[in-house]
Figure 1 (tube, protein in one colour):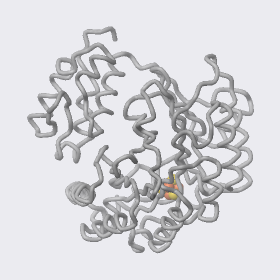
Figure 2 (spheres, rainbow, N blue to C red):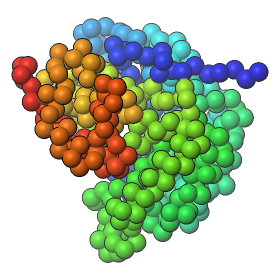
Figure 3 (cartoon, rainbow, N blue to C red):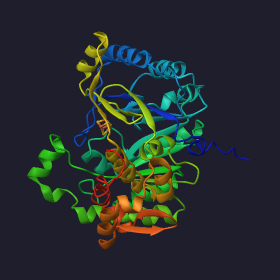
Figure 4 (cartoon, protein in one colour):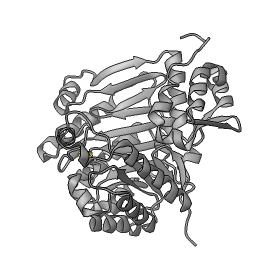
Amino acid sequence: MSVVPPDWFAQTDDGGTGCYVHLPFCDRICPYCDFAVVRLRHAQVPRYLRALHDEIEAPYDDGPERIQTLYFGGGTPSALASGDLEWLAATIFARFRTAAGSIEFTLEANPSRGIEAFSRYRRMGVNRLSVGVQSFHDDELRRLGRDHDAAGAVVFVRAARAAGFDNLSLDLMAGVPGQTLQSFGRSLRRALELGVDHISVYGLTIEAGTPYAAWNAREPQAFADDDAQASMLALADDLLTEAGMQHYEISNFTRPGFACAHNIGYWRQRDCRAFGLSAAGYENGLRYANVRDLHAYCDAMEQRRTPRAFEERLPAAARVGEAAMLALRTSHGLRVLEFERRFGIDARSAFLAAIEKSKAAGLLEEAGGAIRLSRKGRLLANEACALFLDPELSIAR
Ligand code: SF4
């Protein structure tokens, strides 16, 4: 009889705190990427890890508290030596008095890296791997500048299963240059055949200043237009839900019981402590983000200065608006009773204009005390959610 892994989401609560650690190193920089990344140079790693350690160990007024999810993202965390990751994880667990293995611990991994370290990842408490596959077609992977091929991704996912990871997620991308609806469908089916527990599907966005932005300016016809990308995302919805996965957030699908507790924390506006360059956290209404530059971050920690680039205490209206926008991203939607309990407001009145406008455009539906995005609304999510950012509140702003 197979052992059912814990449903980490069921074990988390809105009063808990997540923890995000940013590991920015990548073997090479993909031409579409706009994350805070640096090309891996081994000489830089010890300095960054020391700075991270100092930030994690910095004293907080309210003393240590437990964390209920941990996420190592990047960058490519699996580009680092497993011993370094183990040391970092131990630092976090000691700092927050949390036992390894007692919480959801996600590590982002690229198929080109980390396969030899699976057993060590498991020993240090990683129980969820998120694998950046993007496509199961070699020509698309080449255009994305990825350093793995489709066969390598299959080997990686199978090896992760064999090593005992019973909570596996992979990322796929819609709108890759040269991708067709058919080739995207084949990538989705390949992911299903591999039996992963969770699939994230992101539409390619062209970020200013990247090599892709220059390519797009030269040759816009090489890129999928909005309609083509929307067709791909609709296909993902059809294929993955027909296969029994739950479409629980705009870009995320899960087998029952494998929703990502850490990311649900963001969408439920739970607190999250964040460490590392560019890391963005949210604690009791205070939003902050660290500087994006590696040297600026390390300099700040070495000179005992704050690494934060900005801090912002959200006014009540902004907090409620953001909560609505985040709730709408999820399949639970905006629950009227929950907003009354959390914020003491009648969501239908506070968001009256947004609700009426979205409903008239076919972007929203309402049932069972919850306001949710319709299928059309999920495809136009940014447009629909943005309407909710500025509620009419009679409570103090
Ligand atoms: S591997 Fe991921 S984080 Fe690194 S450059 Fe490519 S897209 Fe960006």
